[in-house]
Image (cartoon, rainbow, N blue to C red; front, side, top):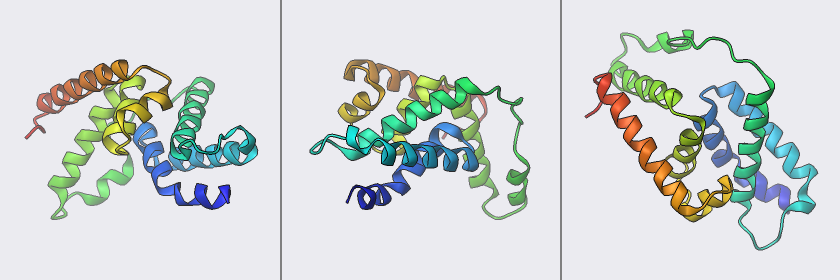
Length: 161
């Protein structure tokens, strides 16, 4: 039964993982690690609590472990695959998406986590605060600072509406 519920949450897990890693492959690896941990430690899940919050916390902790364990290569301005859409009718939309992704990369880890949970995945503030193990007030202030930082970064790059 738990495996079926986990499978149903895969799209949300992947979306959250992509919002904090910015790399499809890293996100897929992160979801795989989270699924392995969830299935291997299923006895730690308390029936009646939100499974998605438990999984998001596992993803968050797995990402923190991953970041601590490796040295990232220098950031590339735009990955090679981003050039596939140059000259395409949707190039402007694509450029805006790249600008948002680059702005998100410039946010602190804690701001990316908050944005990923609340703005990308739509988790309620209370649940997002529980996932991050912080008070709701702290989450609210981090989210406000993250939004402000994103707006500043996007307006500096001429991408803000």
